[in-house]
Length: 102
Image (tube, rainbow, N blue to C red; front, side):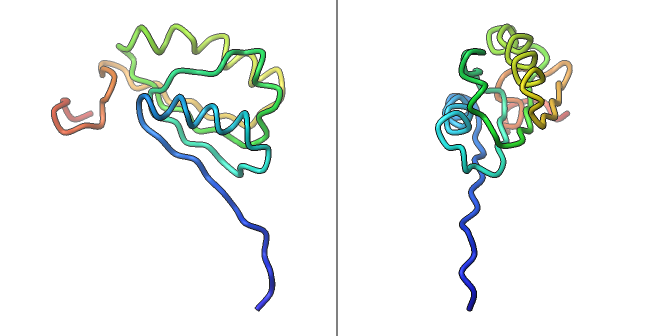
């Protein structure tokens, strides 16, 4: 059996999603990050992110959404692979059972 390099992906929801953003900063070997409605890391820490990111945001979540413009601008400035999905008319925790279906 050949030795293959380990591959790691971080995926998280809500408060833990902020941790997933943090993992992207602290783990340069991270292969991908999938974040659901989590707070962003400060823009000045984005330069260390190497993993492509898939970001999901709830259109009605003003607290989390307030940090999106600076975070996206910093990621794009680093030519970071990024895909952002903004889901309109849903609140934070949009994928939990008690929320309305999309």
